[in-house]
Length: 338
Length: 106
Image (cartoon, rainbow over all chains, first blue to last red; front, side):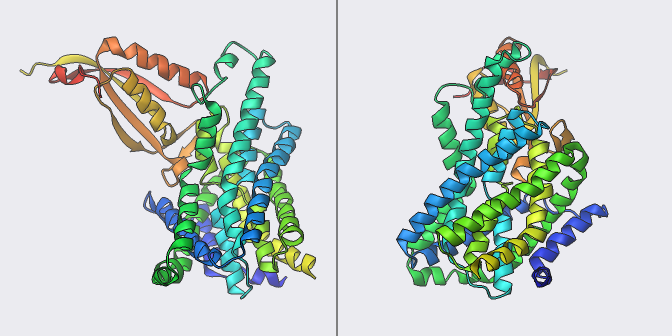
């Protein structure tokens, strides 16, 4: 398929190199904080760029995109939770934590998709970018609500021993709902992305244009470095496959297809975006978070095992989306458009 | 010969998302200070490489008078019951200048 030869872009190839370096146990190592710094740069650059474009965009479509981002963000974790509970391979707490990852988004996957579209000169709208910013939060909220609901049911069922009662409120006190909303909306990557978009939108266009060497010209190079490191991380996690088990791995491959299809429907039929824009919305639906959601889940759902959700989102769904998902969703978007 | 005084050292190893929670406990229990180091390792939560936010561990040291320790340990025990993965151990240490450990942080 021609779609796959289009994956021969440096960003994706560096992802492969990082992955390979890990699999063959190379001694290559990145400085500890590099991925954190690179992701701050990427969010800031994409935010400024998107805000600049949005300043020129149509507001009613933008609001519609926000609305549908929220709907996707709330619905996808519910689908994921139901599927996971049906597999009976994980308890409800783990199901809630994993499902939250799949409702949220991966900026890394989104940026790889942008590199993929740029490489083929496929135009795309800037609306999916606002959706990227909006979709971080709802999934965290749904995940936390599902977890506290499951927790209450476990306690009501008089689960195991007395220890079940102690887990009622891991938030550690009153005002759990406020805490939960605070957690979801003040998340570092949400603040950075929305803040940069806002700055990009209100700053005078000529002053933003002066930043182009920083936010545009070196962008793809930084993305290569970031994906290189993420490839190494994925390569490391894929060894935990066995711990996770075949059924959960199957979920990690099936869930992006469900989310991707939902994204195609929203992008093409509801928002009326171009092929490029629809592909990006599909990526938003398909991708699983590994920056914003894991710390939130770790803090608020301590009962869930981090190696489950991290292996699934970083070790399985992320490589799947980068290597197979992007060309797949793109051809699907071309198909519905024709 | 130096004059040394007995105190307790509580050491906690856990994920860095819990830092704020732990620091709040340490303050509320009247410790005079604390030290946090970044840590790497592996355990029940898988490998903690320090490469990503979610993957970074911390090691928190608190030296405090023996009579203030049990309150802190109660807090830590409650966190562990809630499901948080903490490694906690207590050691006997000898310190110089014991008055330094008496005044709680403001």
